[in-house]
Length: 303
Ligand SMILES: Nc1ncnc2c1ncn2[C@@H]1O[C@H](COP(=O)(O)OP(=O)(O)OP(=O)(O)O)[C@@H](O)[C@H]1O
Ligand SMILES: [Mg+2]
Image 1 (cartoon, rainbow, N blue to C red):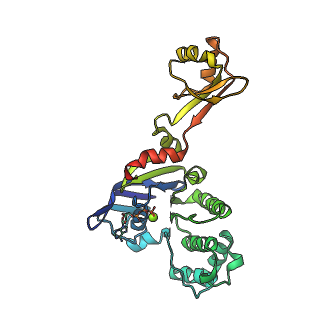
Image 2 (image 1 turned 180 degrees about the vertical axis):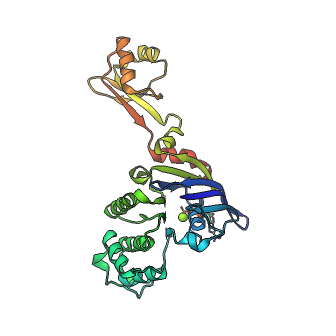
Image 3 (image 1 turned 120 degrees about the horizontal axis):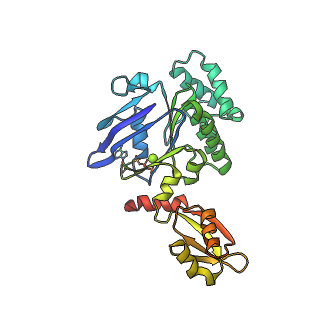
C-alpha cells in the first residue's frame, strides 16, 4: 500500500533522509523510530506529499506521488507533529471544515462518526483554542481519519499525553489497522510492543533496522539470554555441561544464585541438560534486553 524507494531529502548541506526504501502493507502498523533529528518527520512529510523528495519515489496504492499527487493525497490521512488549529472554530466546526475541504458528500455525518470514534463529544462545542492537549491530539487524529483513508501517517500521535490518553490513542490505532496501512512515528518504545507489527529505526537519515521488536533486541550483544538459578557451588560444573559462561546476577530462590548465559536455547532445554549432568536447577527463564538498551545500542553514533 505504501512504497518508498530511494527516498532522499537534502536541506542545503544537510541530508535529512538518505536513500530510504521500505513498503507497508494494509493491516500493518509500522513503528517509525529514531533519535531526535533522525529524519522521521521529514520522511512522513514527503510521504504525505507536503515535501518534494530530492530523490526517490513514493507510490500509494500503486499510484506514483509525482504523477498523481491529488489522487494520492485522497488516500492519506496525515497527523503532523504540530497542527495549527483555527482557534476561533469550535471542534465540530473545525472537523466540518476539514471534511468539506476533502469534498465529502456527507461531511456532517462523518463528523458525527469521528467525534464518536475519537471520543470528542465533551468538547464538540468548545473553541479549539481552549481545549486541553489530550483533546487537541484526539481532534487532530479525528481530522486525519475523517475521509476514512486507507493510509495513515501519524507523527508522534501520543506525544505529551497522559498514560490514559496514550492508551486510548493506541487502542484507536490498533482498531483502525485492520483495513489500513499505518505508520506511527514515536519515541516511546513501549508503544512499539503495544501496537506495531513491525519497526523501522532511522539514524542520521538512514534505516538501521527493519524488523520486529525481537529483531531489535537481537541487535544487542546478549540481547536475548537465559537466566538459571542453581547452587553457587555447581557453577563450574554447569558451565562445563552447557558449554558457556555463567554471569552472576544475584541471590535466587532456595539458597541458589541466579546466573545469566547468552544463548538462544530454550530455558526448559537448558534445565533438562543440567538435570542430565546431575545439577539441580530451581528456576529457568528467558531474559530479554529492554528495548531502550537495544535502541541506544543501534543509534549510539548519533549521541
Ligand atoms: N525545513 C527544514 N530546513 C532545514 N533543515 C531541516 C528542515 N526540516 C528538517 N530539517 C533538518 O533535518 C533533520 C531531520 O529532521 P526531522 O524533523 O525529520 O527529524 P525527526 O526524526 O522528526 O526528529 P524529532 O524526533 O526531533 O521529531 C534535522 O537535522 C533537521 O534540523
Ligand atoms: Mg519529528
